[in-house]
Length: 355
Image (cartoon, rainbow, N blue to C red):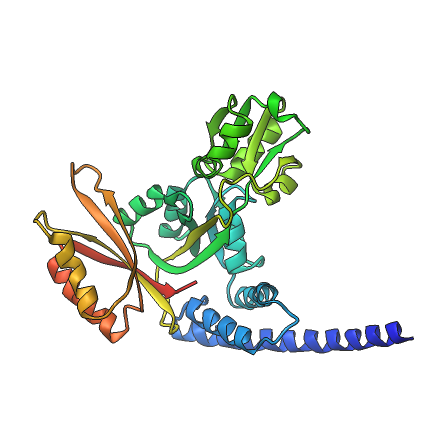
């Protein structure tokens, strides 16, 4: 009788929650109509970040913060789709880590369109074939994804959000092969680098064949049967019907990749933001020090600095800096204005809620 009573109470709560969710979606539909009339974008990363932050502060459990985020991300995704369906380009195919990051950020209601490489993700958004794009930019073990950084030099797209995704690699194959029989391993170059020591220790004689993504590697391992395997995530194993021969083969625990959401506009202030800029310094002694001095003068905290060679210009470099604050914050705006006067070239890549 106790069990029946508890189940009846759960059924009643489910009915109440369904009504409340539908009421929330009706309000979101009205907000969407207001946005259309005012010419505003449907997706507001800053607003969604504030809502999630507020809910996490209210949450006293037993619902975990991770579960809370997953639930409300899907509710927000459903609300956005009522207003206008979003198309999101990502480095594919399905079940790549970029795909998982896109699903985690936008929810399962958005239309996900896989692209063959990072450049194609940029192009899909630039040509307005998609509203947004998701690309990897940095790994906690291997550092920057240089191809992504290089594309920012010539692109006018904005960074409008970031997401950190934990990465775990398995060795997958269509058969339960002994490690000693594996002759070829497919994967992305970053995955090979993140599993370098494990590969050297367990299958040193295997030929490593690079693919555009870990999901593409899993697809090839599934289609090219024999003494082949792939390094990819558990989601790829499920999608391509592969067996996991070895689990969590990354060399260091806590492996995490930072992803960026690309769009044609960045995000409004959320109160907890980052800004990214790209700049070229004069060819003078101490030029970089001079460019970075306004950050210190205005009390702006830089959290990342990367340099990359400028293509077609020998021994020329551009820099990408990430720092705390929004470009509309007074001290950040003043710092950017002062920095721009010193640089040969500078552009703001975007301001966005810090993940």
